[in-house]
Image (cartoon, rainbow, N blue to C red; front, side, top):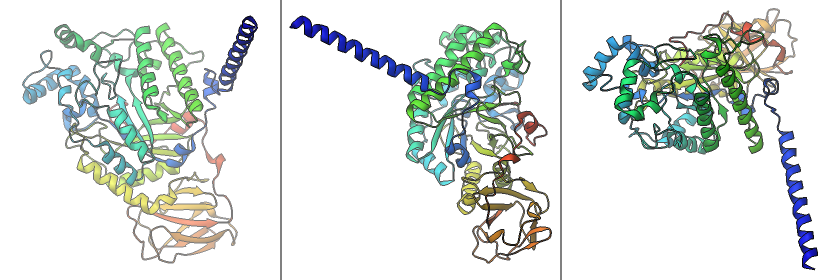
Length: 530
């Protein structure tokens, strides 16, 4: 009897193992991304990203302690490398401020002053929600090698040094409580040449004073290095992202552009592509890293997405949204994102030169009307406070969105994106057309692209934020709107909501060719990519 029971148990066990194996196979088969670029090109744009429109980017790290750049403008988050590149200027600056310069005192020695002592992640998250953001992108790691999370892979992390807090984790919890999506951004792809004598080369060498700092403090090698590309460096690059993914389950994989893909004998733009072996390995590992991230999202029932950064895009078109710094397309492009600065820097820069509030609002509207998302950046101080100039612009943006949000959130592009006469931008939502005047509307506005509309096409016209009656008529030149004397609560830009009898979104108005869409953009890039 015991033998029979044992046999029965063994058969049952085998059947269960077999069933579990089949279930695992089924799960593997059902995952939509098979590791190829072709499958990744089919990734959908998540509704939360397409509808949300507004994100907050945060550049915050030990470089925020410095808050200074030669000539007072440009990307202050690049100063850690500029210290060693422009030693004549920055060594004197360090001596004046800290009393020493490399190799006695280098970037690693500034880290203890990054304390975040006045930082409250819940206050940040509430602010971001109040000003109308729908997602938050925080620098998990910039090019400097510093990890803003509780990392088991490097001692140079915010839990073990500096703030001694899990910045990525704490902010993630806070923004999720506010119902916002979260993306710790990852910029380590250019770390291997950040502190070297030559940038964006496969075989890079550390600067002499960096080597001397490491000689004196051997632990510094894991901050400043590795130098140049190797299989080990690529594996570490992937491992750090994997740690972020597993610990924080981000909604978006944000990666900066990767210059080595088109430098030093490598070129993704050629057909067939040209790669040195280790860069081929990097390219392949990035593809697998994105695949794993996307499939992991599917397994969790989480809508996730990625970006495709740079004029020379990291990945084939269709893999994520187009993105560049301060990007403004002239046309309606494939889904894209502008990571936008209020000033000239992403990281904190004392006495930065800022755009006017009016220019920020206009830029936001233009980006969204052309199928873009507006990822606007703040650069907090090292203690966790946000500079007043940035707070002012965030709050004004929030006040404008509170009045005009109906013309922004959940909208899609129209058949045209702008009209010179009257300085108009357009968005749509179902049967509604929004004509957003980017200069104060006076007298009347004729919407030229409505020429030929039938008398009964328009049901009503109103001005968001105003109780005034808006008169209108269909003329031979198109819909004419008589602007009311009372423009209501809105400032900087005014949104006319036009209720019609037909769906206004025009899917075919998009320029699907990314190269053509990017040609002739109005972008101003102050210092390469950040």
